[in-house]
Image (cartoon, rainbow, N blue to C red; front, side):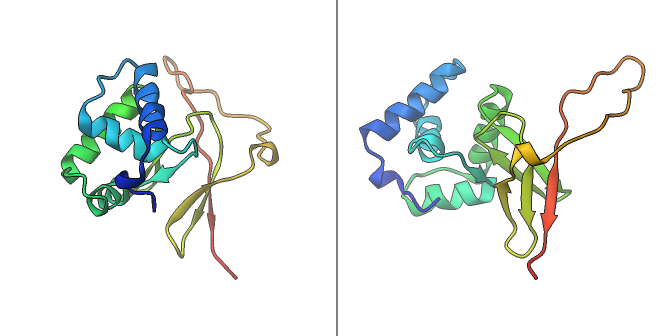
Length: 145
């Protein structure tokens, strides 16, 4: 999240606007700025609401933490992001919405993508009557040696 809004060029803002348009989300100023910070350079990101709030604040974008949470929730509800809950107190928001596993680095509290091809399930349990499996989240917790 080192990128700041002052450095966001027209291409980054257009990328953010196009991203919002894919989900028919109205491009309010704050949504556009947060979207541009998240996807403006074309890279996937794993962010916390607090981390995005600090990045926006550091760049001079006036936004409250509540607005960041509400915006991230809107992005998730629109299918632009997914929420990855690593424990009861911490969630990350991922701009890559395809199913894929994650590494969670316990020492740095960082979430990164893990190689999908190396994860295999022999089977999954049958869901209870009247339910279906919506998705399977794989979080591999790591400690450095």
